[in-house]
Structures are given as structure tokens and as C-alpha cells.
Length: 265
Image (cartoon, rainbow, N blue to C red):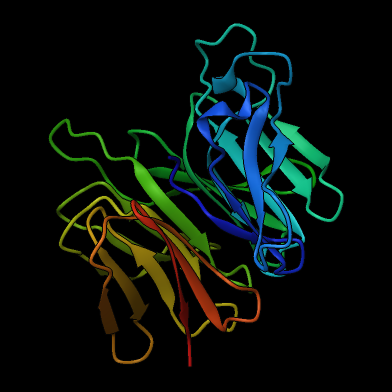
């Protein structure tokens, strides 16, 4: 199972990790929320090649679920690699753009109304913000500083709806999460959770809080601008990923024993 789940097709379907028998071309599968039909496979960026060049390890939908961006585990060592990042229009699943990001992608977030992509890097503690339509780099941010020879990967990123802030979750036990101002790189808030790394984070569409799941069995709702409020919800099963519906009324959490959907008041 991959570490992602996303609402798609105007909130009528959930994009999820495909089954093992989906085939090498399959990037994700679409499951209709109303159970009106079977799961539908969606091809990855390298049809006709091995599954690791197509299967998305991370993917994320825009706030209105009209776009979806996904990244494979392909790296510079793959000779046939031409793209490991792909953006889809979720209405007809046509490719909007695709790109090759090296050396590799540990996390990503489509944010700011689909205008920007935040990309977490492996081992460096850095993240890059790029334009989703051109692929041009807008800024490089040092989200976590490795010390004494350690390696820190940005395990999860989530950009705010207005495009001004980004949440960066790490695999470090010293400082697990930061909220950073995109324009300046200033750290506005930070915290440490009980079981790093953070697997997936999402920003509430109205900017009220950041929701994230850790490497164990808890869902967090964090509002640092409201007295640094942190709410923990026990899931009683290992958490894998989450997604917030475009209207902000539901949080879907992928678990090792299925999916739970929470109503948000």
C-alpha cells in the first residue's frame, strides 16, 4: 500500500492505491464513493514500462478535486525514466503536465488553488515549490536542518489554500513538523509528535487547521494560530494516509484495515 489517498472527480470518487493485480501501467485506482461501480485504473507517466515507473507512491488532489498530482519512486538510476511527476485533469484524466524531478521525491502537495506544487526531498531536509503549469521552480526552502551527519527527509508536505504557507513533516524525532511562510522561509510554528515520521498531512480548505497522521495510529488536528491547539484522535489501527473533502466536511483516513471517514463540525 502507498501512503496516499485523495478525493477526485468533484468529490464523487476516492483515488487510492491500486490492487496488486492492476498491471504495470497502473498509477492509482478510482473508487466511487457511492459504490456505484467497480474500481477504475488510471495509467501512470510511463505506460509500457515497469510498474515502479508508473505506480504512484505519493499523490495529492487540489482543493476542489479538479487536479491530481502524483509521484513515482523512480530515481536517476532508472535509465528509461522520462518523468516521475505527473499532473492530471480529474474530469477526463488527461495529462496536464509531467516532469522529471531528481534525485527523487519523498512527498508532495498541490496547493494554492492548484497553482503550486510543494515537493519534499529525500535526505536533505529541503522542499521545493514549483509552478504547476510550467514546472518552473519558484523557491527552495530549508524545511529542516540535518545535524551531525544525520539525514532528514520531508515525509509529508501540505500547502495552504491561499498559497502563502506550507506544512512540512519530517522523519526526525527532534522536531517533527513545521509551518513555514513560502515567501520568506520563516518558521511560524513547530511541534514534535509521538511517532514520527508524519505519513500524510492536509490543510483544511478554510485554513482552520492542518490534519495529519503519524506512523502509528493517531489523527492530529493542529491550529497553531488558535492558541497552538492540538487535537489527537485515536484510530485504533495503523494510519497510512488521509484526505479532506473539498467542502471541508469530511476527513478520510486510510488504515491498515480499511478506510474511516470522519465528519468535521
